Length: 216
Image 1 (cartoon, rainbow, N blue to C red):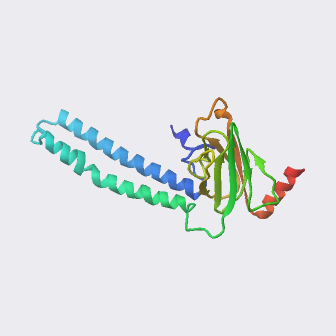
Image 2 (image 1 turned 90 degrees about the vertical axis):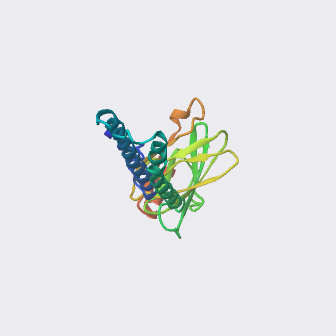
Image 3 (image 1 turned 120 degrees about the vertical axis):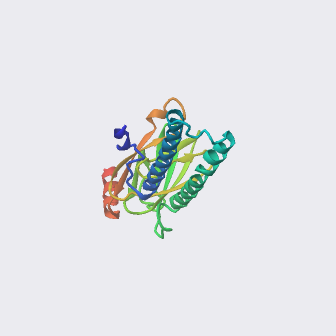
């Protein structure tokens, strides 16, 4: 079970603020669920093994206090925390950035094509996305055929690629490296092979060097 918390496709092994926000929300929800589970099981065991425990509580009181009054405050706090994390993700995992690097991702059965409006001299790439590290990247996601889902688990959340519509996703890689991405929406017989790779470069000069190597 612990091995599933790390790896190229693990959302619990974040490498950027957006993915870290999602992982934090997941751990908080797990902790709250664990508390509720232990509380319910504890009350059940107490009623079974402790004589007269809970006998004076009516079924109506169990429902009102145990089913509504007890979990409601925690659920409200958890909901507001989730909304707060959602706003954080919309900003790209931090304050509103002033320097955004724009990328276009176009999904078709069964590959991804990336183009770079902010680097017009750079040729489009197939199944390999180049981004600068430590900089907010805004990805315009769309599709040429059916609905796909663009997902880089260690960098951010999922975004649907819808034909005739453009959705925007903001994320950032904290450090240079290679990260794997997938289509997370079943889109046909080749869905399992609709994968891509993200290469985050340290600075603009490294990105230019990679482009030169591609042309060669």
